Image (cartoon, rainbow, N blue to C red):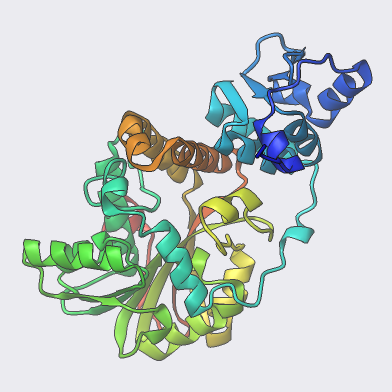
Length: 412
């Protein structure tokens, strides 16, 4: 019996069109895609080339199927990323530079308001666990290929532009500890501890007792095994949600978790900090943010971080800190440090691309290449920020007297 294909299947299996596209469509594509501003060449299905005005394109984008062309004319950013992931759109040239240009140009022509709505279930316990399993439990061996040796999957801090990734990640860990003014014997709670690098660093180098919480089973097992292997007994890794944190601590820290909390649960996080921090309690929130409220793009939420949200400083202050009268002591933006971190990750990922392709497949490779390059471009273009907020009880005077800690000095 002959196989009957649906319209979608015919589109997916058909050869790219060989027809010549009419002049009005070519002109509309040039205008709609802002090819002159982007500085790229664009090849239509069938081979018709739309050349950029510069004559020296940053990259060449080939769209292989007509349907993708029309989708791209309607929603260039999402359709381009989706097409690249599936192999229906090809790029010759600088992918990161192209994405940086796309984000810069498209940011100037869209309104942020329609992206701000969040679903009722975002940040719930069940959704949070499902999101973690989808992203963080892909396998420790995969992340070990391109992260630093301590498996730190958050923004590094480069004291020098030529610092190695390992040096920069250790510098970030120490910066967090100095900001928190950790002293031996104190108790620290960490919400969302990844593979345990910060908790182990605090316990080993600052003599504090740490309870670190995470809902990723793979990460918690890794952290526990590392603590046992290194003989670090003053740290406990707890496989549980941040809402289950109880007891009392001197400092509360969260690095890279707030993006997964959901704005509807910000007050819940604030209450956790309020009930656990002592009278002189202080804390630090490290998170990807934005200058204006809007969702991460649909491709990222569909393929990489379901339910993730990068908040503004206003949203964090109003939702997490203000209801419990925490004072903001310092805000630092490490946006360019994250761009450089991602460049290191992307270079290491590409070195291991054959092994990743063999284990996970070609589409997985294209997905992660797009994610890493797109994230780097987002930070370079200023589409997203990386904030560190240092805060304390509103009534405490146990705060930094100067900002010497920025360069490693001691403050009274």
